[in-house]
Image 1 (spheres, rainbow, N blue to C red):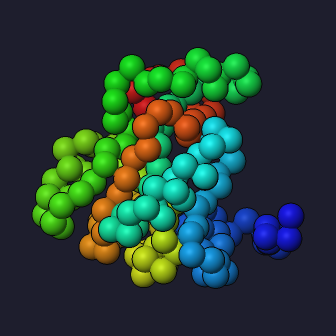
Image 2: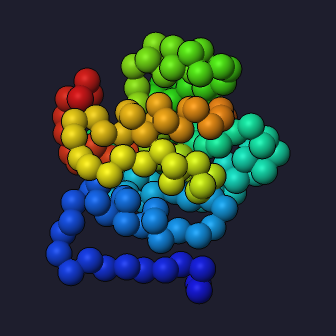
Length: 168
């Protein structure tokens, strides 16, 4: 597929530098990161881009997210299809800036980095260096540009690398 561009670093430059590198090379309207520990339902990209197309006030869109601790099996798409708790890891974030920040911090979860974004706003929001919870100021900056949407149903799955503590 000629729409996909592959870059391979000569050495490991770390997650933050790599995230910045690929984002700076993006020149499309929409952008998302693909991490090795994430699995997406086949409709994840399509449904979230449709949401962004229909709602110009949204600058990012994702789905419900489910964390799993054992190696992935294809039947897990059915197992995790419905979330027992709505908006467990991501919440729709709308309103004025103060309201959006309140929603973000009241949820206590900051999984918003793994959404589909309007590229120009994500580029304006990036942090260039790594520090503890570096994704939080990125999300806070993104919220200045618009709202964040959550599509119904679990369409993204984050693998926690075999960790057994579900409170991780």
